[in-house]
Length: 346
Image (cartoon, rainbow, N blue to C red; front, side):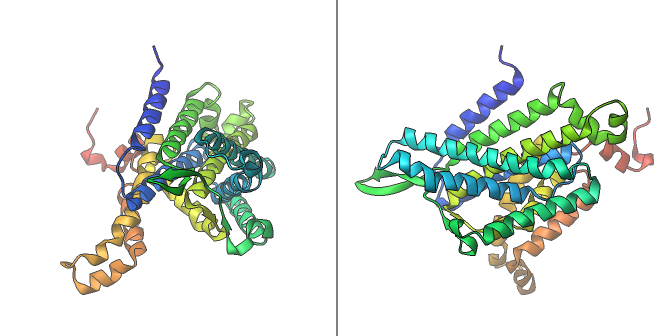
């Protein structure tokens, strides 16, 4: 009998393959791929912020390292091996190699920043990780070989004849994106649920008590950072080979904040909640884009709606005030939020 997590993984991969046949227009296709990438980014950050109880603001830096590393494999290395080949299998293997290279590059960056900084806690750790993310962005912005501030175009596809015309098929598609999202969820969930993974939860619940019991809290924090950075690098590789263009400004502080908001909104430590929040927060700005066109709205409200990020921010504020523990946060936190006179007596 197949254990439940593996069954869920197989179902996720089957869903990803089936989704690739969905007849989506380019706009919806772009949103769908964005949802998959956001899920990978948010679930990987949830391992650090939610399950381990740390506060990282450098996830955009890891995504940038993964994106540029995988793009380097695609642009500079793969052409020497692929030549003029149009084989989808060879190009898929090259793409997988590029993604893994990006993931390991980001994991190495996570290790380099994690070892010296994860002895810090709380706000100090957040400041250090934020500084690391900005250092990565500035370095890329001043590195000519990857386009510097001009950006870098990615050779993201292989030649294919469609209706008699040669076209370029992008590497990143719905099947790759959601299959890797399913693998990310499976790895993080299995890791946290394992005997070893209980150490992450112990560090989150009471780090001082964990150290008193002989648990090497720094090792667990570094492990969470490295694993989270690896999958952030995978997300960066998918992003690079979908947009086919990278610019350091796309990996700024706001990207890290967006990932943190997904984790907090979904519920710290709740994988299902984080997945739902990633999907909602990816679709919400696009839905709000159309609000300004509603003729039945008052003119002044339509003027406000033109800047959809104002409505986006207001919705987040309302949700945080009414549901501070997140969409799928701690049930006991919800119970404590209810006035005592409304609680059911034991």
